[in-house]
Structures are given as structure tokens and as C-alpha cells.
Image 1 (cartoon, rainbow, N blue to C red):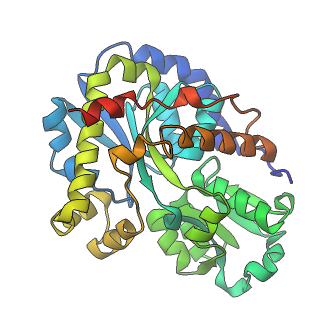
Image 2: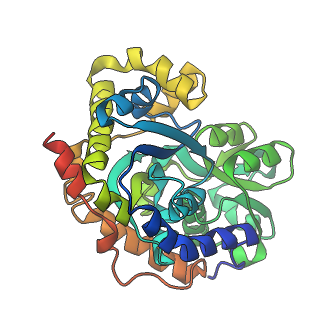
Length: 339
């Protein structure tokens, strides 16, 4: 089964920018950072946003930090390619794979969050489509942010159920736009994450739970990603950033959640209870876990290859790397663990 449609013009331009601007990011990285720009998602609450709001990062790193919100991981890749962003926190794996497969010199340096329940596709409730009649989705219109974790999950689910996506009208839409279109009745199915996913569920149902997706081999996690050249030039700064992130995760897990939640929710642009519900569905691996074989010690590299090969099979990208081992560098996290 082939993905029927080439990447939309918007996404194609993004990917083209990734390829052509990769050299620009290298040039922009030749100078040591005097300030830092970090990409993140709104409506995506994580413990490190406590440090973001309280300016703990700036204090620990000794630089001014500008936090810029994005609505997709593909946009993060383009911003890192141009040198406008130094660190992308919680970038999805599929957009990372799309970028590095196209030649952008990025690296994963940290596992930000695992969240199989917080990324999914939703079918309009009135269609009464379940696991037993999924093929009725053929011919329907779907809103999907192409090149993202949601896109990968959509393709894997449709492949699992034997749905011919070549019959579907697939529209490239950011989750927030997809949720709005879905609420207006303009889409039959929509895919996304975070706050947008919660709004989607008000008008439909998921086909598979997070656990069912994991059993199918659909891993859903985000990473902290950087330009390789910038990271090498600013190794200590990056390690300090990862140390603060790990400290916040440990603080949240260590009984300080109630203290941190209001601050995190405000930084994420969310209601406290909604932020708590979202966080309850997140897993933040410890540094020790991240450095294990399951994650940065080999498991992540293997998964990157699986995603790349699957995207090639679906016609989403022209080719995958022979190996993605070089796109993961645990040395900065190892250094952070000794600080």
C-alpha cells in the first residue's frame, strides 16, 4: 500500500528548506552562543516548563533564553536549519527522521517524553466506524500534519487495518487547524496531539488505545534535538540545559507536582486540571533509563531506521539513511549526569 499523495506544497517547501538550509545552520553555529533560542509546543505541559517560567535555565546556563512556540516538528526542523532555533525541546521522531533523511545535520541528545496516549487519530462519531468496519474510511477526508508522529501513527494504523489510503483525501493540517475543521464538520477523520487531540475527541472516537498502538509497534516519544555543529560548539551549554531538564523531571516525580503544576500549566497555556490530566499520560524517562539500551543506547537508533524505512515504503520520503546511529549522541546527556 502506497501513500497516495506526495507531500503537500507547504510541507514540500519545508522539506526543501531543510535540505537547502542545512549548510546555513552550520554557518550560524560557528559562533558560541551568547543567548539561546529554544523551540517548544504550547498545550504540551512538561516539568521543564517550571524552569522555563522561573528562569532557572537562564540562571544555570548563564545566558538569556528565548522560548519560541511552534505547532509542528517539521517547522522546528526548518527553524534549526536556518539557525533561528538552537534547541528543539520535545520534537517528534517522524519529523526528525524526515529532516535527517533529507540531509539536515541534526542529532537527538535526550528523550524528552513518551506519550502513546497523547498522540492519535479521531474518527467522526456520527460515522459509527469502529475496528470492525474501518474500511469504511476509504474515500473519506482526513486532516493530518504530514511528516509528524501523528502522520506516522495514521499510516501504521491504516496499514494494520488494511485501509487503502490512496482512496482518501489527505489534507496537511496542523493539529490546531485540524481540530477546528473537525469541529466544523469539514473532516471525517483528524490526527494530532495535546490540547488539539482533546478537542478532537469531543467530536469523535479513537480506533486504537495507546497500549494497542504500542503492541502494534507504534512508539510515540519526543526528543531534544539540536544542530550537530551548534552542539559541538556549545557542548557545555547543552549539557547544562539537559541537566536542568532532568532535574525538573526528578523534582516533579519526587513529590513536588502540586507545587509545580500551576506554573507549568500557565507556561503551557492550559487550565491546571487539563495540564494535570495530560501530564498523567506522559512518561519522562530518567537519565539512567535514557542511557540504557532501550533508548539512546541502541533502541532509539533502531526505531529511527524503522520509521525511515516505513516512510520510504509509503512514498512519504524518497530514501532513508542506511543507518541512523550517527543521528543520536548521548555524550551530552552523559556529561549532564556528572554535573
